[in-house]
Length: 143
Image (tube, rainbow, N blue to C red; front, side, top):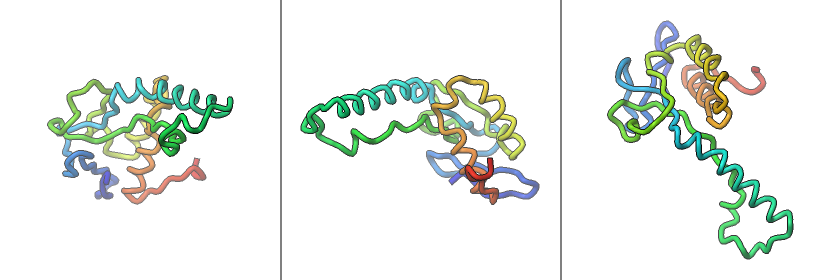
């Protein structure tokens, strides 16, 4: 869960590791660099599998059809306390105090849309989840 609507439109955030609230100066919103770098290769492997099937590869070659057809997941944005697991790995991070309002989310969306790697992350989904958790549901119909 990402949070609840606070007075004045303040967005609260909970740590995705321990589920406790993350106060200003206590954590960050982050996407792990390794996940960003691994995603294009995962998509290429998926595309290669689809091509092999389309070219008539023997279906017996795959042990797990569900895994074969599972699309790779985009790199996931998470909120973490500085001391919680994984926060020491290389990542693009935003101090949690910089994502405390819808206006701040818009500002960061504009900044991040200049990064070529943003499309391999779930930023748009994270923003939707965060807004919905704070009483501002967004859907594709809203854009």
